[in-house]
Length: 87
Length: 234
Picture 1 (cartoon, one colour):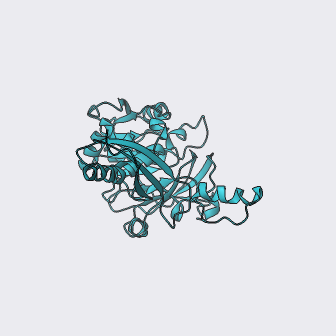
Picture 2 (cartoon, rainbow over the protein chains, first blue to last red):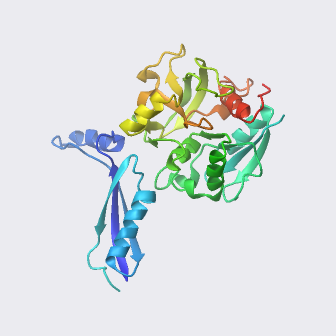
Picture 3 (cartoon, rainbow over the protein chains, first blue to last red):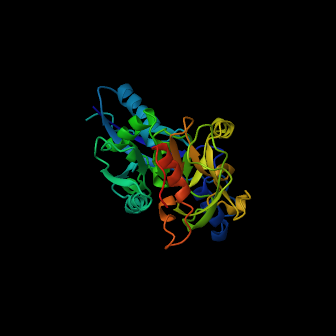
């Protein structure tokens, strides 16, 4: 079975996100002065071959923890893309 | 005695040649090592040089950490041998968990490339070749040099005297104004608890030749050579 996931990685709360801040600072000059808390992160899409969904998801968690994110500075969220659960 | 110092070249390293040259200039024997090598050719110490290993993809240093040569570095660290990580090398050491914390995008977002002053901090117990309270002029050139850690990490490195270098004024006064990247507590360089791993953002290998400018980098090599039981011959 093939399972498709998206892993969303962003800087932890409380850490200054200079990219997010720069984007935020640019928004008022373009006419959107009412936007706050902009954070810029990274999205990783991947497909895992595995016996079942739980096994695939556990592996994605492991990969996110040990490689795709750095737990010192980042947090991650895993989304499963719908409609790709089987081939 | 001529210390044999390995310098690891990754795809995307660009300060490896300057590091090899600095080792030779200061009286050591440079040992070039390729990232795919499984051992460090019996060197006494090792340098992880600056650059953009693996294109800085994912995060700086994140992929280099899995290179066979870095596995050999981990064994060196466990054996108590000295390891110096410069810029990207510092980032790799943090990603590999050999130094605490992480290096993120500079607070000002800009890549910084200029000479800075760094102050050598109090010499940890038993640290050879390291003189505290000196101001070293060494260049930086990085986009991601802001050191951050969890509140526990920050408290721990301060308590245990792991801060080796801080950005400062030409007179050695610490102030955020002299820190080019927003680094926590103006930290420019960190050591591990055991004292055989040193990582720093400034580039000592670019500041060793009096014909080319200031020579603040020699003090950093003096530590590396001393850890190998040798002295620099500058």
